[in-house]
Each structure stands twice: as C-alpha cells, then as structure tokens.
Image (cartoon, rainbow over all chains, first blue to last red; front, side, top):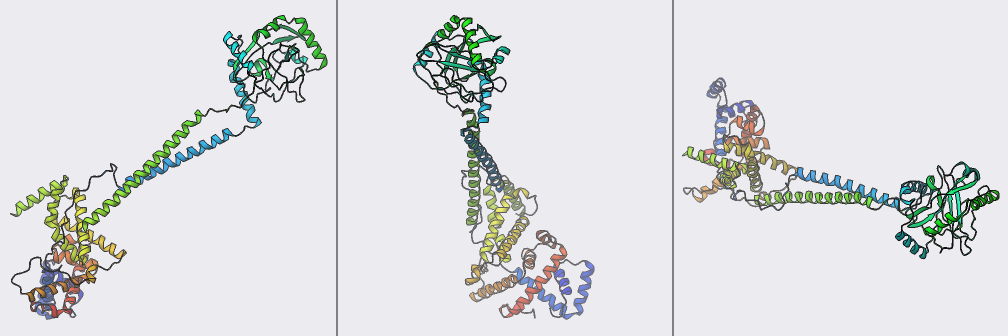
Length: 377
Length: 202
C-alpha cells in the first residue's frame, strides 16, 4: 500500500464492492492497465477480502432460546415508573400523615394544659350561655328528682365556685334601677346551720365561673326590688341537673363558697364565700310564701343602712349542708380529636404499604434482570 | 423451497408477535449461530459475544411489535449490532480482562464441521489462519471493525451499514477502506502463517 494513496485505496475498496459509478469505474480500470502498484494493491485487497469472508460460521456455545418466566406473585407492574410513582405517593402520604399526627398531638397537649384566666373566662362565658336554657329551669323539681336531690344532700359535696371579678356589688341604686342587676342574699333563719346563697349580678361582662357544677339541684327564690322594697317574690327558680350555672343576664351569677359562720361575710375582693345549702324545694317555696313583704323590706332597709352593698338575706331551714365540689371539665371532647388522628394513622399506614409495594417491585425487577443474565450465561 | 422457508418464517414471526414464545424460540434456533458469529467477530471473545447475543434476542422479543416486515435477518443483525455497541461501551466503562485473553486459544474459530478432506496439519493451519485474521480484526477500532464485519462477513450494502450504524454512506465507505487496508497490512505481517495462495500480498 506504500505506493498507493489513501484516496486510491478507497477507490479500489469501492471498486471491489461495485460502488463506483460507471465513469469512476472506467477511469480506474484504465489506470489499472498502466499502474502495476495499483494493480498489486487491488490483488492484495481481493485476497484480504477472501480471507475475511472465509471465516467460518461459528456454533453458538448454547441455545439462546427464551424460557417462560416464572409465575409472578406480584400483581403490580415492575416498571421503574411504577416504582417511582409508588415511592413518591408513599412519601406524600407519610408526610401528610405524620404532619396530622404531630398537629393532633400538639393540640392534645395544649388542651390538657391548665387554662389561663383569660381562657377560663372565655370558656365560662360560652358555657353559661349554652346552659341558660337547660340549667335555669323555671319549673319546680319533679318528685323523683327531688328524691335524688335528697340523696345528694346526704352525700356531702364541696362546691367552690369563684366569682371573678365581682364586678357589680349590690347597691340599693342597682336594685332600684333594674331587677336584673340584683345581688340578693338568701339566708336561713336556722340556728343550726346557715345556708346562704348569694346572687350577684354581673351585668355585661359580669361574673363568670371557673368550673361547672356537676349535678346541682336546688331551688332558689328570687325577688324583684323596686323603690327599695322587695315586691312580690317571684316563683321559685329551680335548678336541676345543671352542668353549669345560669347566665348572669338571667338570674345573675351564683356564688358558692366555703362554709362560713358569718352569713354576710364578704371577702375583700367582694367575693361571697358563704355556705350554701340548697334546700328542698318546698322549703324555699314555703319560705317564699311565708316571708312577708314587710320582713323583706325591713331586711333590705337594714342592709342598705349597714352597707351600700348590703344584700337582703333570706334564711332557709336547717338543712344538711351540701357543698358541691366543682371539677374542671375539658373544653373539647376527646372524640372530636380522634378522627384526625385516625385519618393520620391511616395515611401513614397507606404510605408504608406503598413503600412496601415500591420496594417489592424494585426487588422483583432486579431479580428478573439477574435471571435474564444467568440465562445468558 | 425458499418460498416455503420465507412463508414459514413469516408465520413464526406473526405467532411470536402474538406472544407465542415457542414460535420465537424457533426463530432463535434458526438465527442464533449467525448472530453469535457476528457478535463474536465484533466483540473478539466468546463471553461478551454470548452476552450480546442473549441481550439481542431478549430485545428482539420485546420489540417484535416494531418489526414492520422486510428481512428478519437484517432486523436481527441491527439489534445484535446495537447490543454489541452497548457491550463495548460497558466494557470501556469497566475494563475487564476477558478470560479468552488469559486462557489458551479455544476452538471458537474451528469450523463447526471439520472438513474431512483436510489433514490434521491442514486443519491446524486453517485454525491458525482464522485466529490471525480475527486478531487483525480485533486490532481495528470499534467503528472500522463493525463496518468491516457488516460488509465483508455479513454482506450488507453500504446503505444498510449506514442505517445500522446511524452514519453516512460516505463515512461507511471511508471506514471500510481504512479497515481493509489495516487488515491487509496486519496479515502481511504474519505472512508465514498464510497459505501459499495468500502469499501474493507483497
């Protein structure tokens, strides 16, 4: 090839393959007649091609037939796209699920924490509004409920309901101005024990409760004051099976305190801490009927002279002391939080299942690849 | 006879396209020696050639729906060539020493059926000649080697080679010319191995 250029060799190569057009072929053949080196290279090229083409057909070392794939137990496609989509969906589900779980647990912790005073106020206002119709029933107790109340009297309970703040104390002006702005104190005339129930109106933004009363039953008597005198005592107000106290706008805020021998003991903060013994209905009723207007007026006048916030007192008879112990009730029912938690757990579980599917499809695909490679060997 | 074979092949291809694996396996048995030979000439050693051949048949089975008629053999040659390209690229990424290079020459280049007219000495000479030619082919670059094999072993036209290698006809022409010149020079260096009929290259 030393005497033949690369271009001539390309012509010779195309010539032996019959790839030259007629003009090129005739020109090359004419040159071959007078160029010995070119002819020698053409001969060598023919021999090279002959040697290459005589290479024998080889026998495959084995059969390359395809075997039937084993029955797949996995019903999902094993494509990489399916695996990737499954993994992505699993990630999204688990992120959402864990996020819901976290938020649910945080809200539970916040709910179980002791509420602040401001929170308590909000809770109480809402609760008393809701309880207005239910707890401040104007109907007397049925006999059966009265019996239950008697049993409750036997089981002494401690009640501590704070009035915060006492906003408006009872003044004579308040009494004369509006019947709802009433702070009325009922006290018994009994020597054995005294049960004092104080009604303290809160007015707008008045008193509120720090707790609920579990099962409070009793009857109280309210009266309307006009011109410094107590007019006709109104019908007894029956409180039955209350879970919260009536609103201040209706009958005022009830204050129950620790037992105190002093019937008119009022704390410095204005909080009534008198002992209250809800008596039987008939006792209050009887007292309401038997109390004369004169006595009430006299009491009111006396109280007014003693203190501008003096309260008329009505004394009930002896009653076994019933003090109710309030309990803090969670503002939100647990059942309302269970649903997001269940949904979150379901999401997490679904994500885990999808992760498993993605993993299994990836492993199956890998196994199929290995099997194919083994078959190749 | 050829018509019957062609009809039979088209029937097998149709059955295979409908998912009949047995029909495809009949086609595999028909073409596996030729495709393995092609792969061996390109790859230069048996293990890689077997891998490429197996991969080619698996790919062919999966892509049977893309076969649009014409020469089924040419279609398989194209798939095998691509499988060899993939194998060569893999080998370049992860260079390995083939077992063929470490072990003594095997009988890959032996004729499948020994010519009974050949004496043992002639058979030995033929084997050495084949190995020398293969070594010269192996010395080519990948592109030149593949073009040489497709042209001078498989007998494809320039245009088919250009289609298979995704190149221009002029490129094929140039590569083939250089490949032949390189093999010619290689064989000239081992002239003593060549039979007398081939000693006219000087």
